Amino acid sequence: MAYERFGPVWTPHSHTLIVGTWPSPESRKQNFYYGHPRNRFWPLLAGLLEEQVPRTTQEKTALVCSHDLALWDTVQQCTITGAQDATIRDVIPTDLAWLCSTAPIRRVLCNGAAAYALCRKYHALPGIEVVKLPSTSPANAAWTMEKLRAAWKPYF
Image 1 (cartoon, helix red, strand yellow):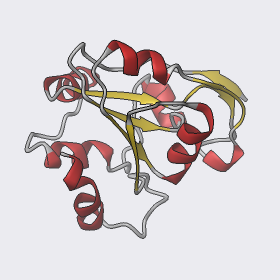
Image 2 (tube, one colour):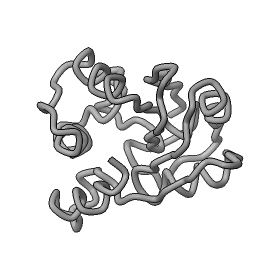
Image 3 (cartoon, one colour):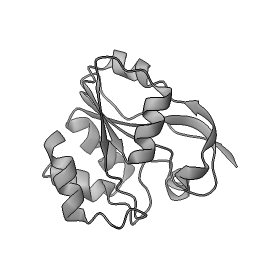
Image 4 (cartoon, helix red, strand yellow):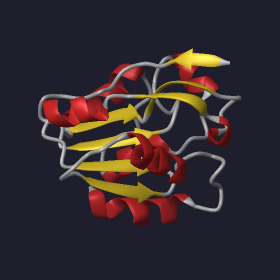
């Protein structure tokens, strides 16, 4: 099934952009990023930033923006089966270059190998560090929260 997705969360001061591939069905239902209840993104980010875990879309947006971060995906539109990144096809990429030229983005953190591969394939971002980090998805169960925290911590 083909879907279009929601836009970026950012401020004019955002210096680090965190990207995923494409929102899960649960995230699309909630119309916001990392909506699956077992995805560890929000608890991980809150812990790294020494903040309370946000519950609402407003709290999540405030957490990202209050730390001059940005949040988006590498894919603007695609065909996908469920939440399986391996089935992504018919890709129309987001305009990461626009965001990186509008805000002072110095680093892009890719939430998982698929996000990293799509970022590298579709986005030329000269002068911007692009980092592959382990996915916070519940499908990446081999990575405990402790291991995720250790891998992500150097960037916060």
